[in-house]
Length: 363
Image 1 (cartoon, rainbow, N blue to C red):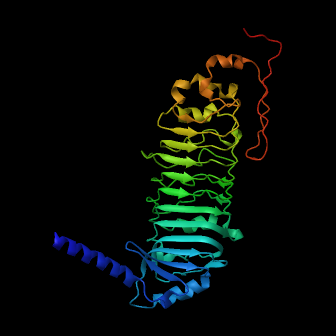
Image 2 (image 1 turned 120 degrees about the vertical axis):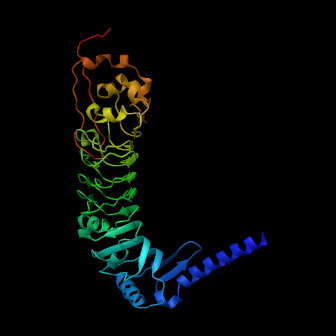
Image 3 (image 1 turned 90 degrees about the vertical axis):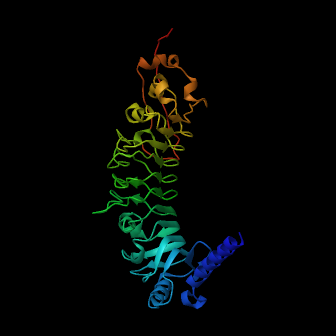
């Protein structure tokens, strides 16, 4: 027993020694810092601009006896962050975090040394210079990380996700399973944006300004047994913002969050096929639903859709499934639809439906 305990202490001591030796003297990476724990070692640069980082890292790259493979690299509070070509020198990182910074330059080869190493990339509270906001150039850079597993870009001024955003020639980012693009200013998501990401399990697009979903926005190129979670809550989506056959090309089971939008009814031609598969879920709470004839199909198809539809409450505050088919006996009569056809407009109080029954008593 004592021998095993001694061996364990020896191994732990050696692990600490390795981590300690991975961080050289403070002056080597100054004004950045090297930090280590029993499990990881990384570099942290606070309030340091890109030019200084480039100078320091390229000087360190010339040294022979300095550890150059790190678990993480963190930049924060950089008022002017120029990510120029080869800013990292030949240092390599498994995770890169950039927080609370203004990115004024982003060279295509800025992070080249870590294109194969990076598994996690997080950009948070970032202000992109104008030409980066539309997403085209930014996503050209992001898809160079061939072993990326987790991507998070949140609380930025990013406005768009381009078509084929993750399309790579001769290879795919098959390890990428989690994408968080919430709390941005995204208005448009291009067709086939995630098409190549066969193992993607989560797409968080909540708290944006998205106004349109086409049939190919969430198209994938092949079937997959994995469930895909798509969060579109807190956007500018209304009933008319969903193109015919939207979500039909996902080719996998789906957990779809549409809460906190401006949806007044679910089009049967779009959502029926999803809801009739009990493996799918659609969350729709906190939308201004009006339980009139346009939502009557849900009651008529209750047995097949009730399990999959979560949070649909009528204008009277009651769940739609508290109603029955007889409540919609008037639906064969002529109706006048004056719903606002404009997609989005989250601050606009929508006019819903006026159902006109003229001089007719239904018994």
